[in-house]
Amino acid sequence: MVTAVYPGSFDPATYGHLDVIRRASVSFDQVIVGVLHNSAKSPLFSVEERVNILEKATKSMPNVIVKPFDGLSVNFARQNHAKVIVRGLRAVTDFEYELQMAQTNRVLAPDIDTVFLTTSLEYAYLSSTIMKEVAKFNGDLSKFAPPEIIEAVMLKMYEK
Ligand code: ADP
Image (tube, rainbow, N blue to C red; front, side, top):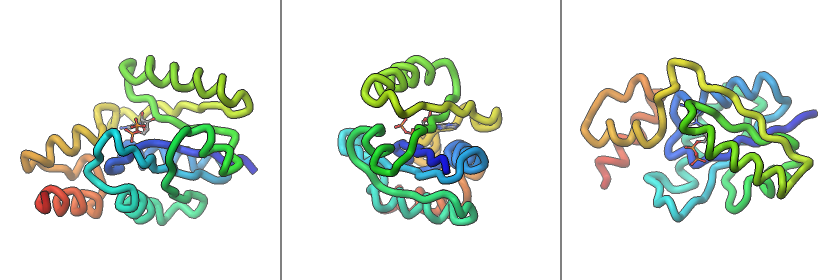
């Protein structure tokens, strides 16, 4: 049984993240999405809200679970008996940082491998940040995330 963790901020999840999760769920027996409690980034959604959003969006994938976490991804992987960390690669701009992270994680935990899934072309431009920017100016979000996530973004923006 091969378990993979997919760590990230997911503030909030987009179709790009959901595509990586769906594809990872085909290759691995279990995928644990780790939602980083990253206070430094002052996220739009609380960690509980981000977990909630992802749980709803992945409910059709029985081998996917979502958990909050804090600290190092390798520790989160170890705690969950995962041998693989999944990350998504959109463009060369992601590459340098992701390579450095993967190499650091390799030094910290040689028994855990990082696997990169290259993004599906239709989501290559997409990030949570871009989605929030468009939302701020009332743009159409329908290509970025499923309706329940868009609703959560609009509610949150309205609340602010
Ligand atoms: P982080 O703050 O750790 O980068 P993100 O939530 O922004 O967290 O992203 C988590 C992971 O998902 C990263 O590996 C990122 O490269 C990947 N990712 C983000 N958006 C997309 C996308 N549109 N397509 C594929 N992978 C993506």
